[in-house]
Length: 114
Length: 107
Image (cartoon, rainbow over all chains, first blue to last red; front, side):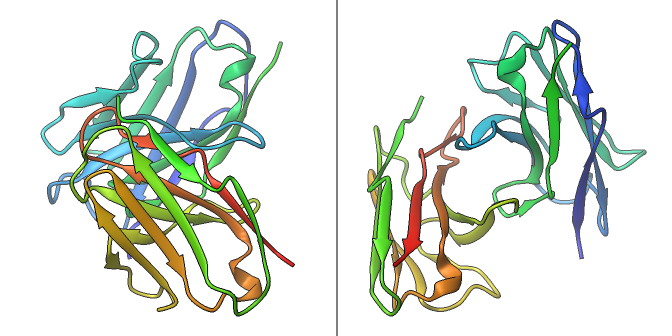
């Protein structure tokens, strides 16, 4: 059964780069025509779509974050990653990785604080 | 960007009652509309995909309908375990977007 697991630093300083990795187990990120993406949820708020990388390697980003976001994939490690630069307190959130709309990781809380 | 507007924002419901949540898109998205349930401290769980397709393991009291710009999630005979936030989500084109959420409380 396919599973996704987020990992990375839980605390990031303002203006630094937030880096998260999603490790996929039980299947290959290279198989099938899937989109692998990231969503976040600030404490007590709703869901915000960050972006995806397609099975062809094409990336699509939320315009509000586009200038700061990079999503990439490493098929040799069966992982895909999120980098968000120049973070502020507003980037504090639970970050989820997902395959298409169907399968999500459990999420990881990232706090931006000095 | 497609804006999704859910209504209501909050609903307090007695068990066995029928619940209807609507999601309106700012432009036509075909049937690329999905519904999630999120309980506190849990990741969202997919309930319905592509407007009306059921998901294995999801109770049959959850159903979806609609196309174009107007969509509905129906919970027939609400159970206590259905207390949660519900979100609609569209994947018709980039950027994908979410509705603001509807919180369902059990009276």
